[in-house]
Image (cartoon, rainbow, N blue to C red; front, side, top):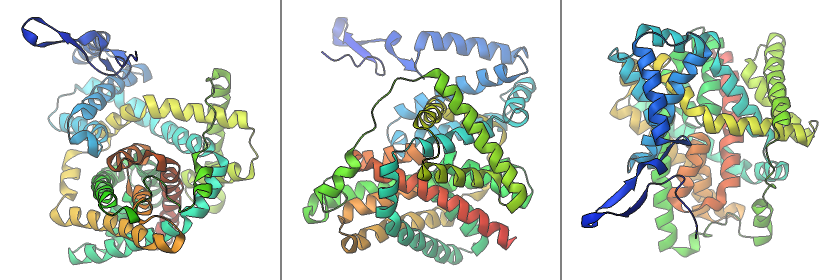
Amino acid sequence: MENNSLHHTVEKSAPGGQPLRLLGNIEVGSVPLALFITIAAIVAASGAAGLLPKNMIGGLAVIMTLGFALAKIGRMIPVLREIGGPAILCLMVPSVLVYFDVFQAHTMATVHLLMKEANLLYFVIACLVVGSILGMNRTILIQGMIRMFVPLVVGTGAAILSGLLVGSLFGYSIYHTFFFIIVPIIGGGIGEGILPLSLAYSAILGQTPDVYVAQLAPAAVVGNIFAIICAGVLARMGSRRPSLSGNGMLIRSREDNSVFTQTQSVQQTDFQLMGAGLLMICAFFIVGGLFEKLVHIPGPVLMILAAVFCKYAKVIPSSMEMGAHSCYKFVSAALVWPLMIGLGMLYVPLESVVAVFSVGYVVVCGSVVIAMTLSGFFIASRLNMYPVEAAIVTCCHSGLGGTGDVAILSASNRMSLMPFAQIATRIGGASTVIAATLLLGWVV
């Protein structure tokens, strides 16, 4: 019998027929609930008394406690969990708490030291971007880029044109619509899109990254919600009109689809290789900064280009790629939600987020996602693809990174499309970040 108690509440009958929940089997971020409550109480009491260590340890204690808790809640709330609940809560709840002065000044100073002085943001970005690219299956990367090139280009073009047109109807300038609504939606999510964009915008426009995160993140979240809705609608369409759907197969050729069903062998984490991978990630970040001085393109963008080139050219030993990917898996599993807590506390002032929302704003976001999805649907027949699957994969380009891919494919019951979704999200997102940065530098 399978034991599924690790991540779910276990129930057994109690007197009167009412289920008795064994709270000890509930986990919050892989921490048993009772132990998590104890840790949270220690951190909260220390923060309230102003006794938190004013260093990285104190800052990590705050953001990890809140991050684990809010991500857990976001996954439990019906409807919200289907539209990126953990991301929404981890960004917005801390912003609300700061707005109402819930945190002590000492706690805020501790988190400030971690996020801005120690710059945890840059560390997480480097691990997510470099580790995810180096960890991709090279065959899938190359073949997927070839297969998805036309749908992504056409979809991106349709999304931009639709967004600019609808944005102008609601009074937004072309500059604002493109750089602050369209680009964050198709930029690849929070970790691989919004954060590198905020650094690039900061380097070009001069303000601190927090200003841009507050303006970019809402568009990405709204776009992800529309993408999930589109995926659900497409799945229903496929069930009603079977001729339009491949039931999880993108290409009308089983032989071609078999290329993308190959899986990489699961290997046990080697912590020495993980350390070497971390060193290599640091080197990529430094190389990006060095070349920035020569070509005047933001370092994070050059870091992405360098990682893609090295993966394509096979210049890095596979063991080192595995080490870098292990760092990516650790950071994506343990630090993304805590990082978003820090962003919510310091980089996303509530008044700035509220200021960008309006009916027109939501309609523009929706037009971007719908146009991209429709372009994939209508171009599929010319590329020997199934329209429903092509539209769903193209739609992933407007999701919240890997989390968005899972939500979109789950909504359409087509998890087999994950390799294509990863190409659309990672490579499509990285290309968007690079192109938008170069264009912004030229415009400014």
